[in-house]
Image (cartoon, rainbow, N blue to C red; front, side):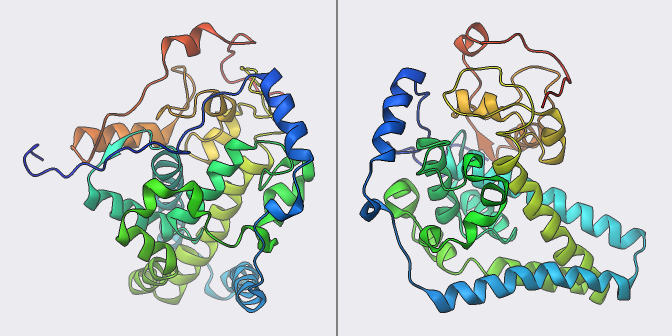
Length: 322
């Protein structure tokens, strides 16, 4: 792709990738947040919409039982795990490392493609996802963190999504993204890509393809994503003092294509690469490197030298600690 025809998405100032907050400063921040009035919190009264959303969510879980009817063959498994891989990358590489943190650049057209692919993972639209995630980093493991594990495993894993407080898109957090009408449209009609995904799986494998390529893979994808919220602040090893409970876990990194290096990420959020050392497998980063070779993305941000100089514990390859 030549520079003359490439439309590069501009970077904008705003709550894109908050800088590391020192522990002393963070203590004062937590005390301030604890005293914050309830009126500051966004409330949403869309009971009907929430009831429908909850019904769809649990209905998809229940629909996994259709595997008892369809059975399974090699094509079903390939479709299931292929769908998991592609859409996990859509969450990690697109929703997280691009829309939430802007750790690399791309064209406006490919930005939209990433948004559509991310929406196919059935985790709402890119603006909603990025807005919630930016709040998580801003208030990590405090009362204003949308999914702090300090509120319990269930809350961090999936309980928080049933709280209407987080139903609305936090537009104040995503002004840099809201300037693109196509992303705003996609955020509003985020259910369109999952429907198209389900149709494609049905065309590929019939009803069995729908069950394994959409239903089962979506449930696995949900809980793989949720594991970072619930487990990456509980299991593993913290390398850096980030003022929160984030940890590095090689097991979670394997399950989520690199997101398990969570303490690394919380320490330096603007890095495209989350596995800072060669043994820290980060499949999402490898895919992004491939896309960079094709000219679809560029300016991938690397960890600065200070990241390797400032650590609270020596890195140890492939070690897991509770």
